[in-house]
Image 1: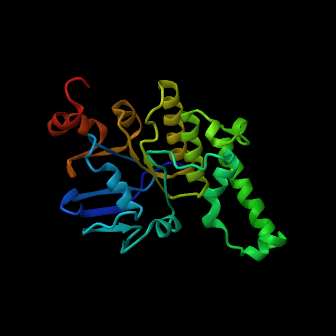
Image 2: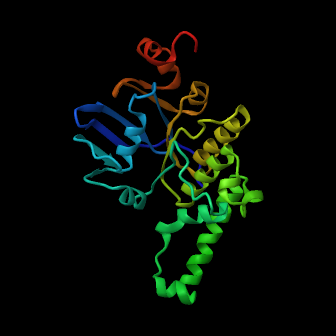
Length: 261
């Protein structure tokens, strides 16, 4: 586990534009993400936040602009290729296997790490056995880290919402990502669940050294845990900077924060 030091730019998005038919989702957006930082993307509903995450992990291909990851331009990347490069993702709507146990769900996060073939696994000998044991050890480490040992054998569908969100984070972490994309990880949670998830996000960032890009609506959370914040509104960038800089921006206040915040 690495010590947290914010480093050089690891992901750069330059002049990204994305449209569906005649509808513009993102227009001429540029920002970067530095190694080991927590980078928040905020904005009102329909601002283009999830579309931007989908661009980063290859679900959508922008019509214009360039994406550079670890110094190499990306062309035509799909989610599987992004995952192979160390980019993991959680979703706004939980995407777990509800009938499977917590342990089995988290194990699916190791799929990209499997190097042995079906026959080797069938006889479970030598390399396949070592690989399986290594994968299980890593998964158990993540389960311990996120404090979900007590539910490891429970089917995910029986768990309360906040714990399901934590299991989804565990599955993403099991892939040992270098860049973790979190799409509203605290949506629908009560205050206590949000506090727990904030702590785990910061722990992942600090102890694993994982770079995190986070979409979140709760401004208190964003201001507390982010190093830098980019603000979108109607698919355009209207702010970018530290939490204090963004908080003080009149354009951001007008578009999103409002006087009630």
